[in-house]
Every structure is written in C-alpha cells, then in structure tokens.
Image 1 (cartoon, rainbow, N blue to C red):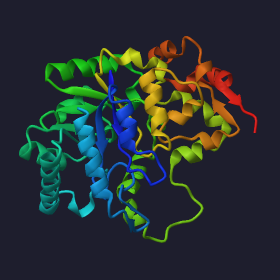
Image 2: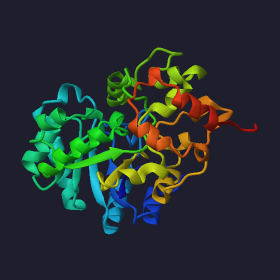
Image 3: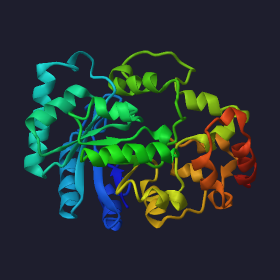
Amino acid sequence: MKFAVGYQLPEEDEEPFVEIVRDFQQNIAEVYFPWLNMSSGRSPMTMRDGVYDWEGQQKLEKDLIAFKKMGIKLDLLLNANCYGKDSLSKNFENMICSIVAHLKDLVGLDIVTTTSLMVARTVKNNFPDIDVRASINMRIGTIKAMEYIANLFDSFNIQREYNRDFQRIVEMKELADKHNKKLYLLANSGCLNFCSGQIFHDNLVAHESEIGCTQNIEGWNPCVCWNYYSRKENWPTFLQNSWIRPEDLYNYEPYFSTVKLATRMHANPRKVIQAYAGKKFNGNLIDLFEPGHSLLLIPHIIDNSKFPKDWFEKISTCDKNCHKCSYCTKVLNHVLVKIAS
C-alpha cells in the first residue's frame, strides 16, 4: 500500500515539500495539488488576504517536475464545492482545458480530482487518457452513488464516514473491480462524521477569497467541530469519526492500493507521512489529523500508545449506534492523558 499526499507551497522558513516526498518516495504513489489561486477544497494556494505569491507558479511547476522524475503520479485538484456563476460556463470549460493541457505538456498530468460533474465531463471528453477521480467531498458511499456517475469517473474516493464499515467497502470494491474502476480512501481526516455543517463549510472554503475581502461577523466560528469540541462532554466523539491509526492501516490492504493522506494544510506534513509510512506513531494521535483540534484538549493529549488491543476489531465491527454505546467513552478515559505544563 502506498500513499497520495497533498502538496504544500512552503514559506521561506518551512521545509520544502519536495524534500519530504523525496525522503519517502518509495511509499508515495501520488501527489495531489490545486492550481494557484483557483478555488478548491482548501484555501487558495498562491493568494492570502489579497497578497499574491508571484513566484508561486514557478515554484509549483519546479516541484511537479521533481515529483515526476521520482516516478510519482500527479493529481490536479479541481474540487471546490462551488464555482458560482462559472459552474456551467464555456469560459470555465476553456480554462479547465487550458490548465490541463499545460500540465500535460509540462509534466504529464495523470489524474484530475473533482467535485464537479461539469469538470468531470470536460476532462473525460477532452483528455480521455487522464484518470477522472471523484472527490471525497462528493460523499460517495453507496453502490447507487457510484453507478449514477460511472460514465464520468474512473476512480472514487469513498465517503470517509464509511472507513470503518468493511461490509460496505467490500461491496463497493466488488463493483469497482467489475467495472474496472479504482477506490481510494482518506486515512487521517479530523472532521466530524456526518457533519451537519459540511456543505456550508465547503461552500465557505470555495468562496474564501471573496469572503476574505468582506467585513464579516466577528466573534463567531462557523466550524461545527470547533464549537462542538469546546465542550469536554463531547470529546468521546473524537474516537467515533473516520480516521485510521497508522498501526491499523494494514487491514485495508486488500481493498486499496493507494490511500490518501491529508497534508495540504497540515502544520507538520513530515510527521503525518512518517507515521503512516512507518505504520507506527508514539504521541498525540490528533496531531496526525487534518483538521487537528489539539489546542482544544490542552493540557491533555490522546496518547496513541494507550489504545487497547481490541480497538480496531471493536470499531470496525460495531453497529455505529454511538448514542447507545459507551465503548469509546471508556477508551477515551484510558487514552486521554494530562501532560505537565
């Protein structure tokens, strides 16, 4: 099993992402990246608070060439939840084709991951040799969901909420194999399962550059997770989400040849990649997730070394009726450790 990792355009005082990938290139199959300041599933890469990184394209393209020389596939993210007035426009179609053609000529683009059926249709029609992949934000977690759009997509990131549902994974893998499709999984999401605010939040991110130039409401965090976890009685939910510990990832090898790691916005991508490549992590488990919520637990951590031996067996076979069960609460009481200040 290898990994798909999310590219970061490093600041001057940060470790170059290409050096991290080079150190783990035997473990990395793909690097996924957005295009400059285009909307995607995260903040724009080359613009912040109206300030542009004018060398951003040059830096990115240099790194993409280096990744390709390592034999790593390249995955362009066109995965914003909303493209506004351009969502069905001919202008946007032309822009997509222009970007993809440029990257094909420059480095040999392999994959386009998108949430947009229009983007999928455009790439499929104009670049049939490129793998068109359904974004995890499309929440594709059923056979029906895959069947409906099988003509547009070659591969699928499965809905993260079903990472611990092996019956569902087996069914989806059988359908994928039958139709010569591929499945991918995100291992280290810090998001709440079935988050009621995901669509709202994803739309905010898609329009972040516009929102950032507007006078907005002060003193309110629109992220459900940060508000929810601010109350200690909700902390057992940390253990009930979709993430997979590095020590448990081997259980997925029969179903996924490549697993996605969220590292695009992570403060320490090397730590994440090292933990999953090494199949072991000693430390605060939440430090591996994106988004991470470690600040909310201070002065506590979730000690990854203290999980019970039956942890994975329990959470991968339970009925997921968390409101009727106390197992994760009991485990949290064991793994939650207060550290000295």
